[in-house]
Image (cartoon, rainbow, N blue to C red; front, side, top):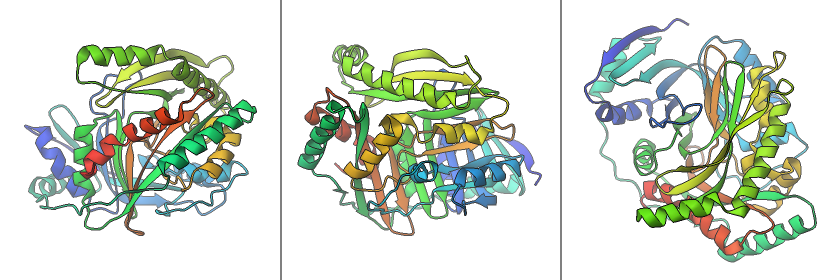
Length: 426
């Protein structure tokens, strides 16, 4: 379907963005991808809005990625959506039987009616409707006064349970069952009268990240301040940028730099990062031209509002016979959120974690009309289901042979800081 396109100059983009977010929030399908103007190798997310759905796709077979390929091949357009962590069960002989508070779809994608590209001096609106009318609706949209309900957040894992589980996981590592396992907890609440557009604005203020997204898909919502890229395709190049290694920040510059250097030279964090880089190299090899896999960036430290992160970059050149969707399939779920070896640790994750991950540690992203794509890792994110009334966020850490259970527990709590702040809870 042809879209009408028009550019509108805006004097202050920061003032218009809250109106845009509340305008898209009315729609059954929407997204706001925000790269927050980060200067990163291979660039952050494009900053743009999608609203309304011309077409939608929720898989109806036992092979969701094949359904996505068919949907992809039938379009010459933008495709927006999410990939649920539990797609692992359709890729391998695995199961997920833990508590599921959101009942989220395994996969959901849509072709948007309206696209709004946020540029330096204005908005480029491309829509099947009248661009003037869309711009006028946004300009006139009254942001509702809304007081959020106070939340009582529960955790599915007590501190003692977490520490005991880490001890047991370390025993598996000593016995050679696996090398590293990403072990997570879930924080949840039953809520009502919640305005997720306000919460995203607050989260993005507290923790502006290069792969942030606000997304709604048929009653399932993602409010994300993700620092991590899962997979990007640019031309025939595919890029993964796994994070392994987290350190808190300090308001004092000297103390903060000391913490940064502590992370940079931590043998434990370097070992974790190395394992996941090797895993990502193996995953990309399934789609790559022989000899094309490279690691142009290793153990680089990036500093965000609340944490320092250790990030590496793995690149490859996509073989001509590999469909872009198969490149995603071959690397999913991302190794930074499983551990190694991947299948064995996903079995152990199901045993040790108490809740179904669902969209958490899955991915949200977009595919362009040219067949390029960019997908994040859904961490540092709040999820809400209008269908069940539950809100949740998760946090985890990588458990290795030399992991200290008390330290890993506090790292998990540190990772929830921005989400708690956005929700107004301690």
